[in-house]
Length: 239
Image 1 (cartoon, one colour):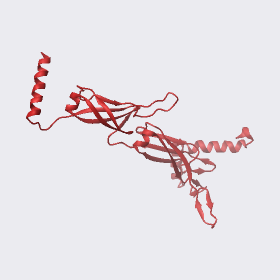
Image 2: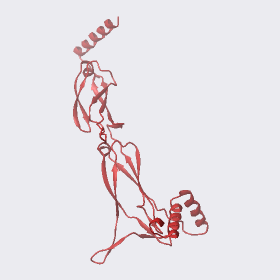
Image 3: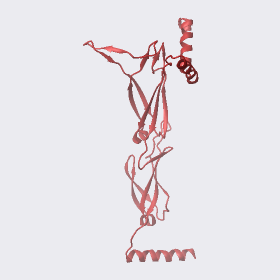
């Protein structure tokens, strides 16, 4: 930089090259012109990756180390392996770049993380690294805000009389209390078993299990008698 004793002309050249190489529309126009003249187009300096993220990592958060090989492009537009390192035996090996990617808690869908200046090289300019994090679905759970949601099939008898129910959460099996007379679709909330929030005031979300009744497919005489009495009681209450 000129303010730190650098050459102003060199700084201007590098700034112009960077704006050229990182402007997609400008690059596209120049690539078309180069193609018309039979020249090689300017190579893309950015590196793009898509990383699938398991559901448990979206719940608890995580970090991963990604290694990749950035390339240096010569004046003939041909890629040259970046930073070769000679071993003690005289053999040349490639040195890989390493970046640390943080997986945020509560990730839903896709999220882009950008690492400036760690992509490919061309004439003193480096591109960026773009990492797309794609959250994978879970067969039972979904994330909604700070809550983890699921559906549970519950015997109709338990909804009517109430009782305890084992609820599968990301923190193991927890016991929940079903209130007598619970209706289909009512939530059963397990406190503190959702997404943990960051920050000084951060707490934890809940696990919300939606109760769905399971109706009996067969009934014996005793069960039919119970249903008959319940029906009479319901009709009396309505009157």
